[in-house]
Amino acid sequence: MAAAASMLLATLALVGGIFGLARAATRTRQPAQSLPFESGGLPEQHAVSRYHVRWYTVTVLFLAFDMEMIFMYPWAVVVAQLGAAAVVEMFVFLLLLLVGVLYVWREGALRWT
Image (cartoon, rainbow, N blue to C red):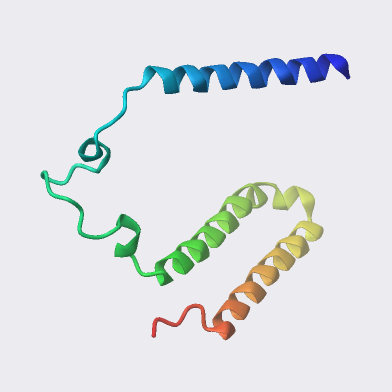
């Protein structure tokens, strides 16, 4: 236990030292240098405000179904070896995803107006 604590303290000291060295080595930046380059002009709006908040819902929905495909590819390779239990498990997984999509749809999160 003492060895783990001393290793943790040494790691924290090393990381803290590296951050301190990096902060000491950097020069203070001028405000114009810290802004994104946009032909010399100041940005008129924040970069995040260009996208409607509904796009984030669509993105999360896409990622959910993308993860579904990540789980289904290896399943498709071994489904013949595992038998009917694997098919039942995949349908339960798909049913859970469908219940989630129906809930989101019912709550109106996919409406654009």
